[in-house]
Image 1: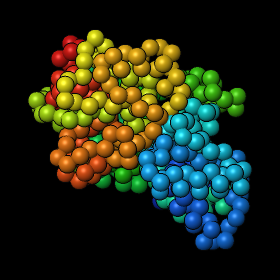
Image 2 (image 1 turned 90 degrees about the vertical axis):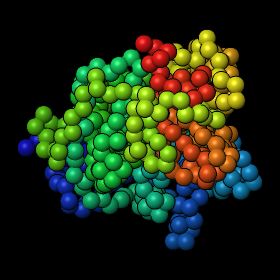
Image 3 (image 1 turned 90 degrees about the horizontal axis):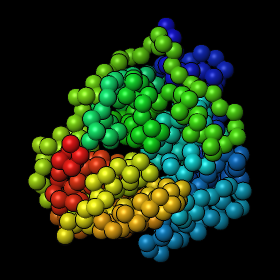
Image 4 (image 1 turned 30 degrees about the horizontal axis):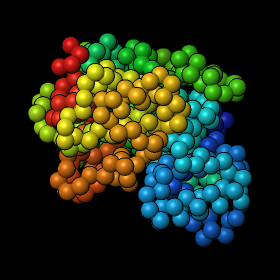
Length: 418
């Protein structure tokens, strides 16, 4: 049988054919951490008596979670990161650059076939570029920074195949919520998910990143998309490094293949307070909301705002509803400004925030109060995720978010577009 994408990447990395279930030690191409995890990794290194990292060029720090600092404690952590980065020659993407999973590929630091560790569970986002990218704890990240290596049990691979043409009111977020609703939150524990099919092939890079990003909500170790010409064209604008397409073999030996028909997928919602509680938006229409958030590493890309403006442009955010729009990176923000998207969002009544994780994790710039309800394009809706533990969060696509912001209640975007 042929090899999956995961098996190809890891076999090349260790110089021999590898198989699911075996343990390997391997070099790491990139390690990164943000202001929620880098300080912990720094503390681990200090406890181990390690003053210098092994290869600074393969380590990146990003200040993105509580950025700009909303309180003194966050500011102190930022200072700790800056000082350690300076003393070790580590490149740091400071406040305003954006969310780590968006910034790194934009800077040309990600390419097909790489092994990437990030001290954040949504590191899996980078699997959209054909890289084996997985989230680890701060201790594992610290050891990788010190030694340049990590250990791994080779995961089994499953294929998620989506074929056909999506409805005009359906986005990648709806697709991945459909998959999560079917697979459930533990349906892919320590599994390598590989997204295949004509629908995936036709998706933009922005959309593919959404699929990879939320694979971890099913427990996946990685969420990979084959690196094709579209991938390489996107990366070539950002790096001069040699790039090659990377695909699984036609006869790859997957543990199982799950197939979905694009035409059957409707706009979806994830209900509070578990991501896998998925229902069509049409089943929940009419539920009131206090806040709509369009942003995060799952919904703050240029495509997301362009789609949202299909509904918001010429309309107004409903009175009594806060609609917060936060681009995932400075690059996205600059394109929004250049194309007039920021102006259109502001005219519709949105509050435009800086490139930050902020509202997604309840850090700042959109924190929910007692019993408030939000509809968000972000990644998770656990109890207290965006603020007060009595608040509730629905997850949805930017199109559904825009329709909901205009109506002030959960609304199927098809009502505006069909």
